[in-house]
Amino acid sequence: MVADTIHVHSHLAGHPTYHLFGHQIVLDVPLPAIILSTIGAAFLLRYTLSFFRLLLELIVLPGKNVKKYQSKNGINKTWALVTGCTGGIGIEFARQLAKKQFNIVLIGRRKNALDEVAQELESKYGVKTKSFVVDVAQPGSARDETLSQIELFAKSNDLGVLINNVGASHVMPIPFAETERSEMNQIVETNINWTLYLTRAVIPSMIIRSSKRGAPKSLILTIGSLSGRIPSPLLATYSGTKAALSTWTKALAKEVENKGVEVELVQAAFVVSNMSKIRRSSALVPTANSFVKSTLSSFGQPRGSQGRPYERTPFWSHAILDYLVGFAGYLSEITGINVINKMHKDIRIRAIRKAKKQQLQKQNEGKKDL
Ligand SMILES: NC(=O)c1ccc[n+]([C@@H]2O[C@H](COP(=O)([O-])OP(=O)(O)OC[C@H]3O[C@@H](n4cnc5c(N)ncnc54)[C@H](OP(=O)(O)O)[C@@H]3O)[C@@H](O)[C@H]2O)c1
Image (cartoon, rainbow, N blue to C red; front, side, top):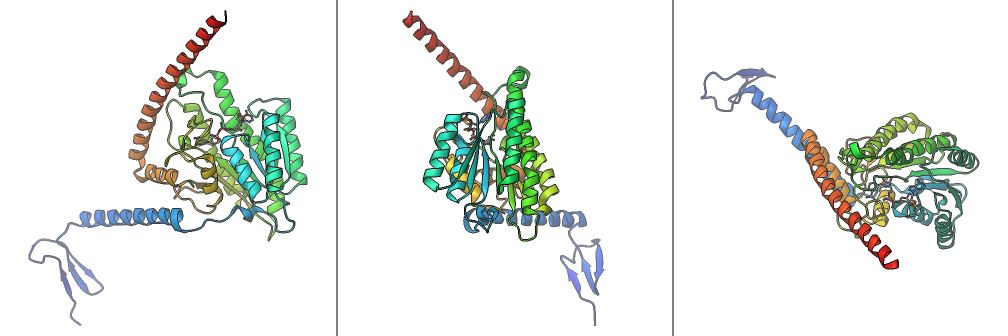
């Protein structure tokens, strides 16, 4: 058989000729250009496929349900523990997990508020509740005692879900060089130390509960923040603690994944709450109710966190934002840092102006009273 000759433009002399499986291939395009366009095409294909997957997960595919963490034998037997559950995202986790017939362990620092939440959950959803009153930012014997009680509770009950939701941030955006040590402590104790100590207190029981063949899985879900993903100037301490939680989550997840305990970080951008100080929802800022709904209905789907193990960005607009941040590596990150820097500077100016106005109002009211 006569070998074929493939000419792209064979009239161009001096171009490299290759022999492949009996064919003679004459190239009129330089080899480096071919290599580069192949790499380019591979990247384009990768991003097209991953964007397609993002859309599929957001619009079409159903996620796994949170009920998979419930014990099959015994109705209303499994407990879910939610920290910071007297407001914001936490109270929504408590409500929506109770609606799915989890009994709820409530953790907060205000007894009256905890009692109200407990009563609401018991009467509305017919579940059991157990409350622990503790200021999670205060190291000392009271916090240690609460941790011991929770450890005991986990040993003697079917605790299947831990939602590490409680978090503290700065009162307003502030340069690190001006941040008070008390504010740093409040943030580090709440976001890091408490989260680690609490998880350490319950995880051995979860391993015993879930490591046997056929046993229900357990879940440890920690609420992260895009401030931990994109370094956030003027919230440096908060941003650093959320980044630390992300790395901790992944290391722990690997340690226990073969023992039936799933550990994951859920990413969030702005959500309507006291912490964000945003009162009205929009496409970019969901209510806590919508945010939690998307979180509890999309297990197994990374959405905006594609390519990052043990992590999810469930709410649709946060997912697209997160996806775009990951799109162009260094360029996306440095652009993100610059945009956030400008945004936080503006917020700080407005917050200082508001605080001065409130102080003036107070002084005037004080004068009237005299
Ligand atoms: N909102 C957002 O835009 C946003 C964005 C990204 C990530 N997140 C993360 O989402 C999580 C929840 O935030 P959120 O917006 O729902 O906050 P939030 O509205 O301020 O609610 C925080 C909850 O935690 C409780 N809490 C705070 N400090 C406590 C302490 N020292 N001891 C005991 N309980 C304490 C609060 O209790 P009290 O009722 O007594 O204050 C409240 O129940 C946090 O981890 C946060 O970092 C929020």
